[in-house]
Length: 296
Image (cartoon, rainbow, N blue to C red; front, side):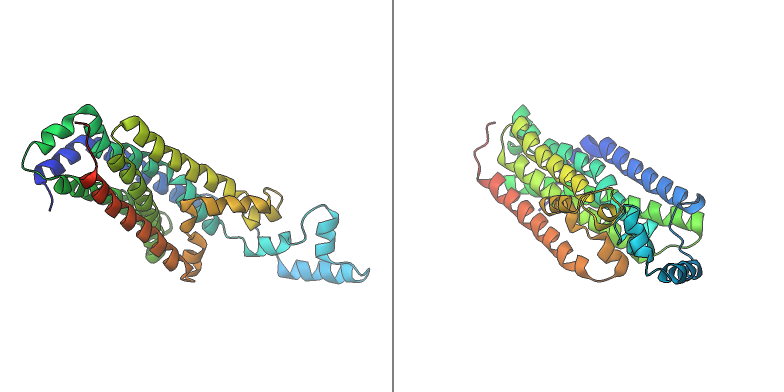
């Protein structure tokens, strides 16, 4: 069902962009792991004995530590946030749902459009379809390349993450790294499916780029704004809880890094939603491209 000449042509046309994206992400995760593993990261270390001493002293005047914190102008829940704070969980949440998603989104927007609509717009698709190669084989081959290339990016990042953690800290939670990268890959595939559908539907690049690129920008900005609604940031006064509603507007929020860290398995049904989105959009792409009128 695949056209080998077309597949090799897609690889030849896109391998430089793919390699740059893959190496950049591998370098990013390696640097982050190196910094976290070798530098002294500020965190909250609460001495329970000292807390007890202050509690006894304040109790003499019918006061409490939470009351003191509130009198200083802070949310009294801030103490609970400090106790539960984990810098690694915070970094995973910020990196895998925001930091490492920008480059793959740029990659899928550019590549998905180059694979179909750019060729239709330039007229080169006419030469491809003038051969015995059917439309269905063309679109399936291009879809196959896009999926495999996205998975390849995150396989390289996962390998770099595991190796850098072993080098720096001598220990690594392999399953956590694999789940985080698998989740990021599934999110990217869902976005790739949406962009590929636009590439299959439109006959002009400008419309397809506006469709896929516009959605990616919206998802990314909504997720960034949603970070300020995180309970931790809101409690310490760095955010507003109501900003959390932006998380419901972004597909990136379906990567639940907290659930992965706790192995609560909430992330499984979210992964399932992303896989359904990817499957439906890629399936619709094949159908739409086969049925539409091409301006060749």
